Image (cartoon, rainbow, N blue to C red; front, side, top):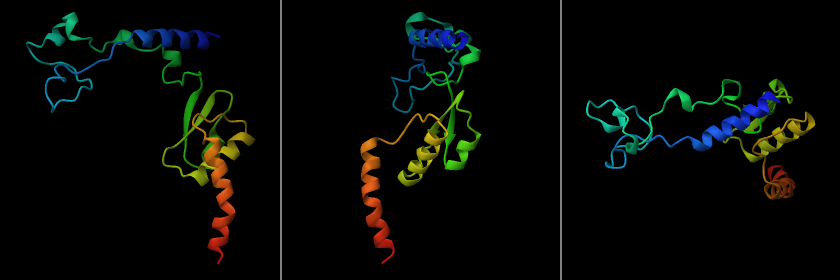
Length: 145
């Protein structure tokens, strides 16, 4: 119950968190807007002038107990093959299939995960898996010719 409360606290905190942007990143093409600590002697952002934006500080962090967890409250584990599912404990972990995994291996991973009752965060859409299952016998026939 404590974890659920802390997840709600984190959600509220993150909704108020500003987008930290690099000082003057919008002015020059060569500068990205992603965060860099301001170091300029006369920099307004470093001096803390409110209209120039927020500076990343300790107070914006998540509660330590829920830091890095998925919004569902589970710990994410990246899976690249069916053997990686052995180390997952379904009581507090969920699987995220790596983006480099192909459709055939992804379907194998999903079968093993459903057998072990492991939740997958990014399952294959149903219409794609149906198409793959329909085409599979034709491909097998072509290979054996």
